[in-house]
Length: 361
Image 1 (tube, helix red, strand yellow):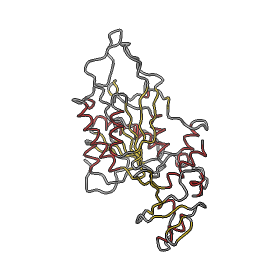
Image 2: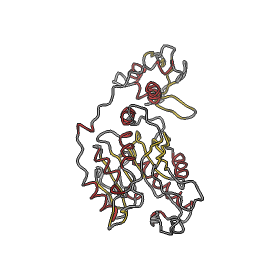
Image 3: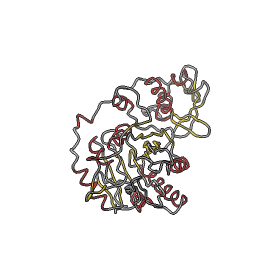
């Protein structure tokens, strides 16, 4: 078990134990991104057979069995709350699931204060047929991508994802095959893990929402797909897994991955176009006469028609007024001014990001 008194992160290690207990022992605000592949609560009660009466190798593991929805919801709330504490304020979390659980998970995430950025549909081009023919074939799973704090800055490598998609903006429907054949990790001739995820899926997750050197944490590590792809892309990772059998499989798998080539993974980000503060007013994101709030003490400043702020006797740019309020200390105005949307306050940086997205469309 990871020692609760150790403050440094156990980078590139698999921690043995229940994820809720292990997460409670980790430092707050320490992970850049979390990828979670929790039990889906498939509610399988009987064996599944093909038309020829051969048994389907379905997910019937003990870790996916819950007494009822209430028990599953309690479990979900506990592990999500534990993840929320460990995730950085600028961090994001990905959670994958199926129709059995993803709607319950999403509702609990919203209740806890996570802000959903996207739902991404993983479309399987080789799904398992519905052998009984009583429903549509389940050909997709859903990932929820959310940030810890609404309006906080977060990593999204838009240009890398666009490049990966033949210079077209990547959509939220990803067609990636199930893991089969030689890509499926075997143990004594059988599947090492019943829900092994494709490396292509984690490749997009990690490339889109982390930078080289970031820490991605996986609280349900399983066969180690997250760690293998993170190592490939030059990211640090932490895995939590309670089953020693899976830990052994994951370690051997990750050890076999070659160290990343720094030149290949350190892709230079395109320089972002300068966005003047006045653009927020011109574009209607902020209004003339609207109040902004200074982060340090909630001091109000009024937005003028020319994009300057007026705060008492001080008039000037977002940077100049902020500097005056900080007694001459250097400060970036984008980092310290907030606007109100309803009862909540958000960084003006969020609006700058929206304008950049529009320009990239």
